[in-house]
Image 1 (cartoon, one colour):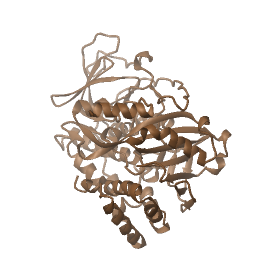
Image 2 (cartoon, one colour; image 1 turned 90 degrees about the horizontal axis):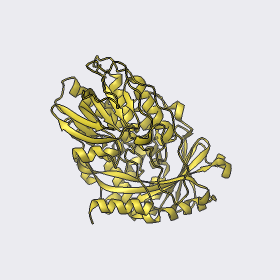
Image 3 (cartoon, one colour; image 1 turned 45 degrees about the horizontal axis):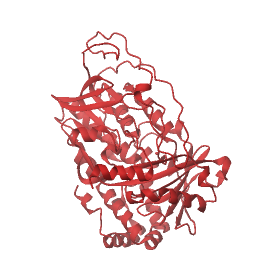
Image 4 (spheres, helix red, strand yellow; image 1 turned 180 degrees about the vertical axis):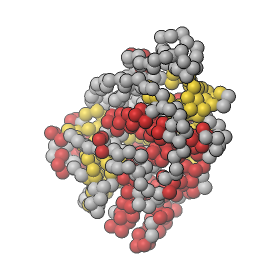
Length: 491
């Protein structure tokens, strides 16, 4: 079976039309040395920007409906333009037959968390940046909507305006059995909604000087002499560098022959208003249900006026996700028929040998397959890759590098130990669920997990003390499960 047919079967099984630009989860970043590289100012004035388009209302869908679709750019209002289009640097208006090509320092395709953050970092350093997205903002995306503390630490600004709840406690269960409560009272995960988060991040990029254009469909990406060319809504833009952040189904990876996924996971989620159940029982904590979906887990995440119920696992679980979601609801004494905005989506998991950068183009976030295998979270990886991508692009623009290719090995090296451990835990949970759950929920081991989630240590390699013996036991289970993550250690 061809890869395209296999993907079509997965999408059909979950009844999902996965968005093309899926990206790819309270305070300013503080942390590790690799998060604190000096920002080199490029000394360019940021371009003028047009007023942001107004929001459009989305629609709610039934349990069996397809995923929330994007507004077709062809039906959207035309973007406003800068004055002085005849000046050398001006961009041509959609209605004008102007053959002048607008050249930027960098073009970012996709305004999800990774793309907008990369555009912000570059624009804040003085680069002339074009940020494109096919959807009109604000727009929603299927996602649990959790930003871990370690992910928040990577951001150069605060997330407070879009945070709806803060999880300081985690309820763990195996096969809907006895609940184990964990949490030391410190913030672990900030809960938000992608409609609010993505819009906020795009606004930050725009405020920093990025030329943000939503409702713009990119139809062609090509390598040109000393740069990359992009065609969007019939107009041509050139740039010194291109950052592909347009998700698992985006054009960037295909056009530039970058990336490549080892596996694809699937997930299904829906929202339940607190007015339909006792939402106070869920505020301030995450509920994680293990051993209920092969290759994954089920969850309940609190939001402002509702909770997000979801399930995720191997791609082969696609046809059964609705049954899994219904079982989760039953276990929490709520009705699956009351869920709103039920949507499915695919999760890209990067191959260890995939190429993330070539020449003057690179991939970040979901477009690069940067999803944590065991949790399905991609916020940390998206923010980290956007930081590394911006730094590599600044090196290129500043003449300190000839290509963006150093980005790939640097990012892979930073994530190597975590991906090895995460892949191992994912498969070991499937093969030895009781033993793995008992070890992972142990207070000492869970304390180490919290330190990783908070960003106090980079990965399991930085965990020492009393947690080492049980972690060695987990390592033995991982080896018995085939050690599926070993390829990432040398990637």
